[in-house]
Image 1 (spheres, rainbow, N blue to C red):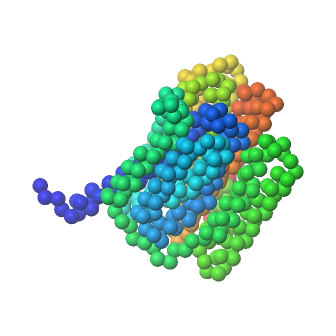
Image 2 (cartoon, rainbow, N blue to C red; image 1 turned 90 degrees about the horizontal axis):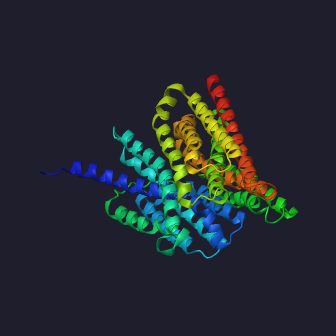
Image 3 (cartoon, rainbow, N blue to C red; image 1 turned 90 degrees about the vertical axis):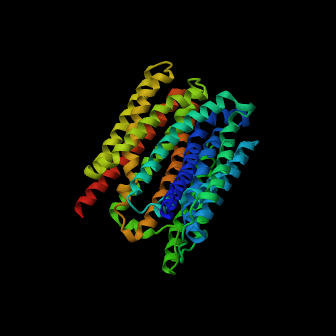
Length: 469
């Protein structure tokens, strides 16, 4: 049977999809696999609580400040070349993470890993956008969405399995080393099978803006991470105020870049649209409560309840599958009922948090099977919100500003994740210092619930603003 050129092109684009979603899967697994290994990392590297928080937060800061730049580098140098560079960089920095001999070295390696992820990940959606402009687009994005959901479950299970089994005596280091063969295989497949994509002339970088944002975020979040270790000395507060001033200066710098006809890292004019600005507020507080929840719950399960890493990972797997189940139908529901579906999802997540807090307060030693139910309820609520949240918020942006709006959305989610880990982690460890493990978790869960409530308030505010237009 003869293969037509058209059939070859169609086959090749599905291979391209398989390659980029494999990279997205590796990235998603990495985001969760580290959480399961954190208690073991803390013991072996003798890392402080602040250093453990920083292992998560610094990765997010590096990714957040460079993700827009990574997308633009794909436009300038080509998506394929930038993607392969990002995958190889992510592979090498993962190897460095696994070889780290101290907490500070692991933090530095995680910063580099986040920066290389910012080269890799933006090319995933760019590739899907270019390759699938026909009726197959919906199927391609459905595959992408399923991969996102399954990455969480795989991350928890794989992390628990690798740490518990102590493969080849590598312990926690294997959660980083596992990226090495995967990354090499993905890069090799991309070089041979990934179709090239056209470059976009006129795209410019705002490196100075990215560096200013990085310094500002580090100035604000760094003191939150290490303030407790430094006994909240006066200069710590001064550093935080300086970081806030740098971020304010970043906004002025971006306005000057735009006034000169440049291409700023973040288009501040988007904040002038009240519906989008309120939606972005909802995004910030939702993600503020997102990764920080997994951070504290996995620490609690392993340190307070004495779960093994495998038990901790298994306890969270139903949450991940509930998230996937909710994601599969929430987008269609949101298309008909709008923001109301997101508000209902937030309410379900709050119900899961309340049930979890009640169980922790009343049950002396809840086992993994008992924790699965409230965790699954929380995950279902998160899935109802997260899947349609991006499309709902970005739908309020004019088509001409879609790229800028998407970049700002992605940056906001990662900044919020980093800030949430820093703040809620600080609450958890501070409460642990003056109370019990249970009191520490309950204090952290109260903060997570408060952030979700604020997110729902912004969603309601956004809905009212949209109704007036």
